[in-house]
Image 1 (cartoon, rainbow, N blue to C red):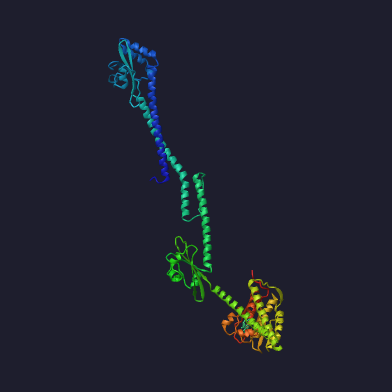
Image 2 (tube, rainbow, N blue to C red):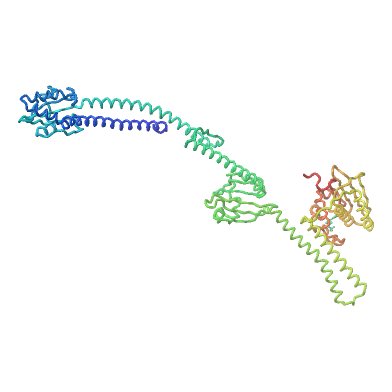
Length: 594
Ligand code: ADP
């Protein structure tokens, strides 16, 4: 019932008023009766002790024959001073020995006076003026002695006046109490309304925040503690909203990262159930990974390490393993997350197929380089050794032919080294293109005429078919000529003598193209066709070497064309022979790029 602040406040106010009124009332009542008591005795003292003349007159009066009447008469003249009204306060003249009633202002009560403490004291000759607030009356008894006659003057007040006064006071206090309670109820209602309304608003706001609505702002009306609390609460809600937004952004960022990262990630709970996975993981493992689905940790990675083993890994530790899946090489790293609670396991999957392939290629490349250099080096070594051993004993012709072999082999080595250097410059990005604008048709024609003699030497017919009006292009002329030379010289090399070679060129859109076709041996196998732009790749190694090839020409050509943002490819056509096509931007390498 008193749960609400409203009621509590009302109860406190009412209790406060009641206790206040009770204390004040008790104090007032007590003070009034105390005052009355004190008043009575000081009045009596004023008459019977401080006025010796009056007392002397009383004694004289008492000594007379009809002493009692004389005394009564004297006292009746002093009723005003003594406060005797004949109703609540009376005076009596009693016999000094027996205490019997002789005269007084109240004949009805006089004969039946009770023997009070003060009265009995006066009968023994003492003044009886002891005050006792606990008694229902106040009295004073004065013995009068003279001439052998003893009397006692006895004044008694039955406190009727003070009782009716305190009665009225109590009624007044009770009325004030009732009035005070009514006011306190009203005030506490108003006060509680002022106090509680902002608290209620605060509570509503807190409920809305608890329900997730951080945008709600509570109005601050006052500057008191509740006002401060409300504005602090608003600040807190704002901070909370900002923090939650930041966390949300961070989560979205991580979510996007998780979704689009190239590495696969699968998270399992401590029971081995999937709790998160990304598309890359599904793609790499080639299966769906539904959250909380049938697929468990054991089924997927049980062979790598048991769930318990991964969960037991110390900080920074993880279990790694590799797996071949179809044509893919995967590297798996499994580590527990939230290690203290052993909440679960995270498995990261790297697709290392490309890396392994690159590593393979690197190894192959190094082996190829060593091999390509070793062959001429061995030849040079053996011929030079023979020359040294014979010490001039060989016929001059043989000696010359040996020296020619040494020369051509060293030239071949120099050629290979030069090609490797060119490629390494491309790889390290140190080779800048020297762009100029030149006539494409002119460049083709001068390249063709440079190859004409060699073609004729092999009995080939080398023809050109250029579209009229080929534009000027922006490119590195020297390097593009190197590409065309390589392609045409390959056509000459790989076409049996007496073949046909055609160089055609044209323009499509904002690109120019060049095709070199021959009717030579071609490359029938698709596997070989796919690889001819690789470094040192040669379909027929012996033939290539015989004709002075290094197996690097087409890879250099491809690098150059790629750097021009052009295309160098094999044209897919039926044999015999081969067609290689080059495409370049008319406006230069950067055309069409932002
Ligand atoms: P190489 O110095 O051996 O000629 P390239 O890189 O220029 O090296 O060519 C790579 C390989 O491609 C050659 O070894 C050859 O087997 C093949 N090839 C290139 N052009 C032709 C062609 N026109 N006809 C047939 N095969 C060719």
